[in-house]
Length: 116
Image 1 (cartoon, rainbow, N blue to C red):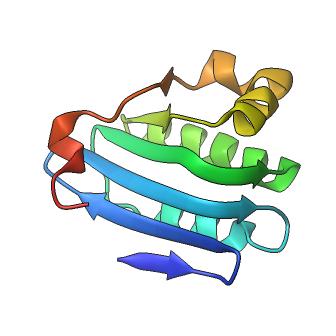
Image 2 (image 1 turned 45 degrees about the vertical axis):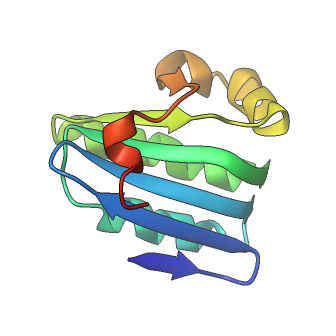
């Protein structure tokens, strides 16, 4: 499954334990709907992993979408994990305090990378 806008693309892969969203492009007020749709459409699993390594811009709208996803996934008994944010995105996560609330990791587990 994939969600797409001219400036944002989200690729979704699912296995028994986790859902992985690979996000590519700019997450701002114009494109956040694509990210939000992919987050909400993700099936329930123990982890929802959002790979931010190819995100060049993360606006306040994107941060709000990630916070809402964190609360929604947690209410279902799961965990949102942010993966490999680049320096610009990582700075946004630090400044907003989201990095203290949502786990941020440097690598995707091998099991999630299969079939991506």
